[in-house]
Image 1 (tube, one colour):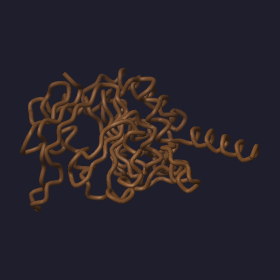
Image 2: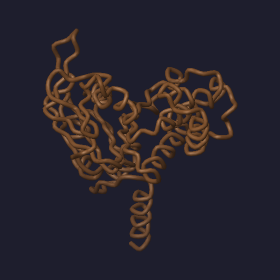
Image 3: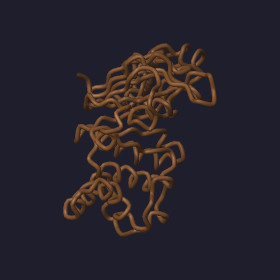
Length: 277
């Protein structure tokens, strides 16, 4: 049994006949790092909300660790399994002190006070925000606020964290802070990451990329497999490609180059070859 399973899932919002998600079959294993991409209206946010029962499909089934998201009696258990971090961190911060905000989730789960103290400290240390534990959240930068939001989810000890466009409102420094924290959670702690983004440079850091278009999965594979068809990504699906890939295309290199290090290696090789000519 896979950690997360979508079986014949279709979802339409009550006020529209358009299907936001249509006939999705999907399995996600524990510990995977998955990026979900697609243009506006492709179904990304609906997909995110289906993962922990914020939305329940009228057709098909979504299950997490064998628990159907439609099972109301196991709703609390489901929320402990899958935590969500949304686009605007201000919408998730509820306390006037950082450590109190991080403690909010476990308190509502009925975790004993002494364990909450340990969870809060551990979560803040994990995302690099322990030294800010007594600060007021409104005095933090956008990236720092988002890391506090992640710590609040982490303190509830989920197996999976869903990031729904969580860096969309941040500057490049803030985006890097959040991405570094997310990669650490995945690689050092084995937490499953579902990372929904419209920044293609972030998508390439995942192990697997899922491309949504009009509510359907159009591609599912490694970053290189999904981005390999440059024309389809840019013309058919209306998306950008990672900056390194675009740069190499402009230089006439017909290879799927993803990531800064790979780009630097190819540029160095090209410069060396030109120097010998």
